[in-house]
Length: 489
Image 1 (spheres, rainbow, N blue to C red):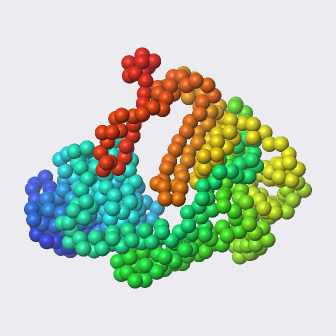
Image 2: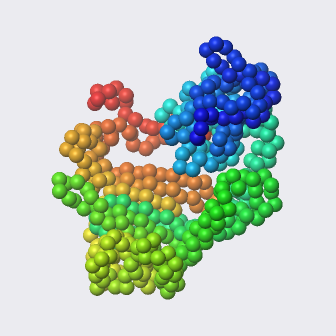
């Protein structure tokens, strides 16, 4: 925000005061408020403050806030009471609401914060909100809520905002956003779980990071069409869309991006993978050797034509891409500089920065050449995940990554047993009619020891029987006897 003033009083019902060391000074509609001043609403009163960027803050009765300008963005410090914030798009920054026990951060959304004597409660009507409290972080979507203290039980969001002068508008917006989400979810096809892949077998032997995702490009245009149809028949959704997307130029850019992604995805198979390879350098440090993006191809002729078209329209400087016909014979031009290399085969496409990586991939494909990666524990862990069916998959070869630790760090990690970690595999999957399932799995190259051995083997957790059915987040673990842990420390 620019200027000397942080906000202007846009609306007032009842009494609003500026709090100073000398007492209370009444405020009126139209007055401007400098940063650093404290404002309090009286009993039976409410007010609306408008920031210079268009953000509106609605204060309920007996609420107190102070506005502060910081490097990362404007912060609303809520000392007591309730506020509802309609945050304008924040560009590269964020808008924050700080209470004594939590920090709320947003890019542009509508949410409520209630600060009482026992803690804080955050509720979301539109958009996405990140709440940090204690050592926890919650990401909230419309209709969701989090409290910072167990004594603050959940309440319906509509009850939490019942005092607002815009109550009917907020309730209507939440209802329509919920219906829109259900319509999009019902219309889109869900990718099937993948139980095998050719792409994993083509990874470089030096791969230390691997990610695989389903090709969901076919859903993008369909989802966008559903959103546009709903917006055209709803003033509330139309207002939400305009505030969320921004200018007509931004909307055109979004439409163009969706069109391009959908078109590109139509040439590809059901899965896209990304890998990062590393090699030992001086001092035993891990350094980047290559990045590799791979996908099976449905239409290699169409994909090549699309890439040529994009290169012609973008220009060589904006899209420094080389189409490599035969990696085994290709030599980079003397003045090529840093280039992205793309090879399109009969049913596989690979994009990377290293011609050697593409050559190895083609050798394995065309000559049936051996791939040392297949014998590594990292490949085994990823292959086991595919055996159970994958949707979104991320893996890391922790053994190689940790092997590059500095000597001092390595000594600490060795004592803790962390250097025995072999691989890390993260999964997110959702089968037909099933809830979203997340799994993280660490494997070790031997029996766990040190702090890594504090976790016990999997077993029933009786404590989960006492968790409230309304809980938003639950964490539980089986550990060694605390006395044994203390002795090891």
